[in-house]
Image (cartoon, rainbow, N blue to C red; front, top):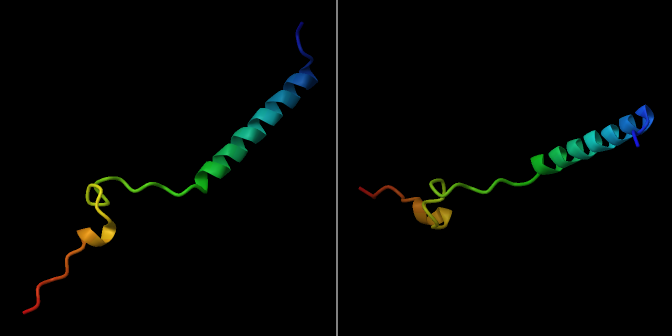
Amino acid sequence: MVPTQDGFRTVMAIGAAAALAALATAACLPRRPRAEDEGAGRPPSATFKEPAAR
């Protein structure tokens, strides 16, 4: 059975709205730092070294 044109448009509109909602949700998720940004697993404070006092 072939769906009607109105049914097809309705299903496509629902799918497009769901895709946009998923995109908006994914854009709000925080990013995970890369290993080289974090010093290969060490906490960020361990990668920072203060300059030596003169």
